[in-house]
Length: 173
Image 1 (spheres, rainbow, N blue to C red):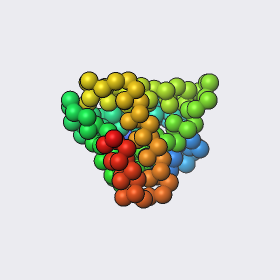
Image 2: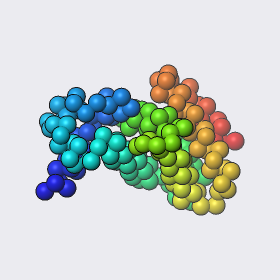
Image 3: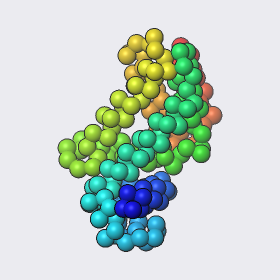
């Protein structure tokens, strides 16, 4: 029973933080928005940090499943396929959440954010490796760097056409 309730509230909290952000999340407003109490959240997730860790894990799973589903296999166009997903406005809320968590993780030595950035780098490099099995680690790293930078740019400016043209130019070379 508690496991089912935990999953239900995790999904509601995930929807909430996709719209409201996670780094300044407060339990009271979150609980009110998802129809529960801070006490129940603390019981199910052990602490606010436990809830944040569960939300970050949920976000990574969502992102990786979506990306894995759109990637061609065994071709050198995985970067462009990933960019199509990254630049789709329908994915903006999960990507804003990712950027927020990634930035918060940088330099974190303790707490729920620790390791998130490094783990997502490993996730994405693994994804690129499976999509482009013959590519070198240096190539995958360069593609990832272009995609991350382009993502930050498009989230900041909303200029998908300009950024897409830049991504295509760099990844085609």
